[in-house]
Length: 240
Ligand SMILES: [Zn+2]
Image (cartoon, rainbow, N blue to C red):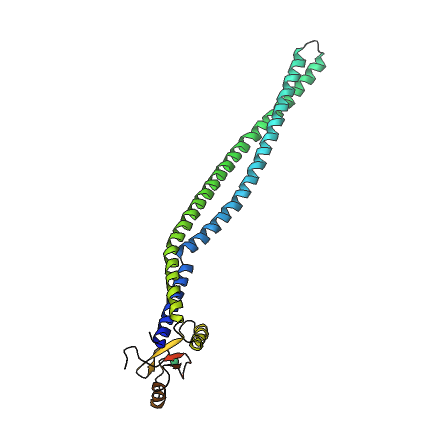
């Protein structure tokens, strides 16, 4: 392989490596994983809110139930005292009043408990659903990671193979040309080398003047384009 051919080949390999890296970064699974991560964050924050409300609801119900039990115990006590007998008319009336007041409190507790328990059930349902969503998203993330790894694998092995070929091509260039190429590659974002087609460079496509063409054609095979300053291979691929 001539040095000019090695240079053209090197550029070809670098451009292909660039395409591989772009494909690797643009795998659709990556976008999907980002979306899943956002959804998981949202569900986690919703779940925190739901769990807080559910715990509050449980405490409220426990308090009301304790209160209810207290009034029931109290009612039993008052009844037992009243049933003991030997009370004055006034004492009996006081027992009666106590029982009426306790009955009202019991009724109020029971009235509160109904909707509170319904509210708790709703919160428990919401919590279950959020946890199911969390699990589903976790499974989806795992599956997406697997397909991403599989899909990346072939690209990665291609990159390894191309890198080997690239190093071989680079080793055929003189140190000076390799250095110029590396600098031009950065400057021109990959398209560092062009080749003459007749009297037209293949990348910038600015037609050379006859005198320029004559000078270039009789100079080095690897030179610099007078217009765009890319590296210019003056021999044509077909070989004129
Ligand atoms: Zn040019």
